[in-house]
Length: 282
Image (tube, rainbow, N blue to C red; front, top):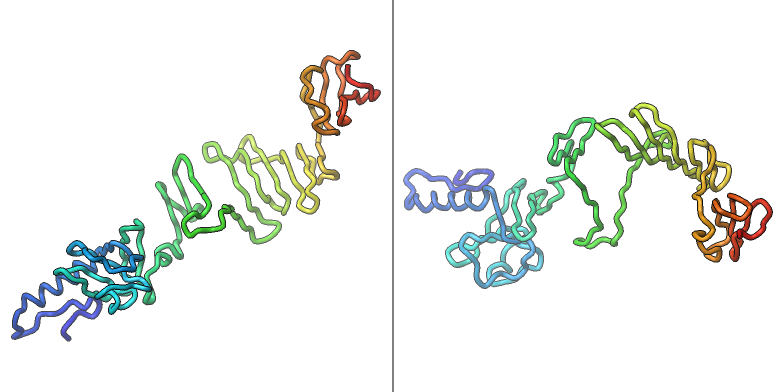
């Protein structure tokens, strides 16, 4: 056996002449394959000039005096004024300089996917746990549309639950004690719940999935477009501050200084009128 089985490092053999050449070749391969960094994995045209030791992953469509004869996915090392081909090793991890990321040699191809596939936990500036397998400690997190691939320009956060009776929600906490929650909580209706102690929650708003009707104040199943479980307070307006009636019929306001006293009024699309007798607010 003249070379190692994994990295193909040449062995020194008994009675071998010029053993220093064999030894130097082994060091050269180690220098390329250990803690590998390449200049690029997407450069197609063989550089006219390169620095000693520059290394490239050869992409499809590669071209040039030496690159065109080399295998796709091979490593091209610039050494002694010319490029030589170095065969990559399965499982080899490489830092790609022009993209600032890592790729791995997996099943004969270079890919970033095996580095992130199947992670049991991920902690960013924090320790992840079995209960919180993804943990991020930061002042802010950003999810944005894909401008690199590129994507569609959309950005969606998807939270999927197993069944209607399960929960898919976002919880807001103070000191790791829940204070508000919105999402699909035990049903397919959209709910917003609040809590003063992190234990007992009460519905503030519920949107029925079947109808789109909205229940406010914990009113249960809404029977109309807006079902309020309790009194409804309207903002008080002085007559002079009422919005123009022409902006839309059906508006309701509480008028604090009508001639006959405070009154609830509605817009008919032209005038504000008292609910009591339909007379114009004056």
